[in-house]
Amino acid sequence: MARAEAEVDRLEARLDEAQQASAAGDAAAVEAALEAYSSIVIEAVAGSGGDPAATVAIEVTVTRHVVVLTALVDRVPAPAREAIQNALSSSTKALEDLDETRKKGSGGGNPDDPAVPTGTDKPAKPSPAGRDRPTPPGWSNGNDPKESQGPDNPEPSKRQ
Image (spheres, rainbow, N blue to C red):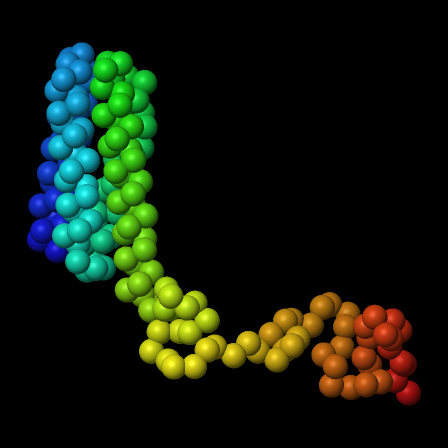
């Protein structure tokens, strides 16, 4: 987690530099800060090592930064717009990678065969037909044939 916090601090510093350089109209400084940002975001994801707390810390930071970077696109000097687009692309890729890491770490199943849950050798069996669906309002649950209502018996028989 300490490494993730250090990477988050580095990302924050590069984004602050980019914002300050943009306000000063310094396209070269914006580009330099955002090129560094793009490299750091990739390093941060790789360094998270699947640690859930690190993954969340990086994900929250990068998600917030995507909003800031998107707002900066129209405010930075024209020559720096490509650097913003690259930073946004790197950030989006990082978020996708973090999401994939979280899915793998949460026991979300075998990515090679989604029908085989992680930790089993057998494919998952589907539930018997119709048993996993709720009974529609006004319809019988099918246990009493006298009260069964459905396409073949639109009117249930009356109880006596």
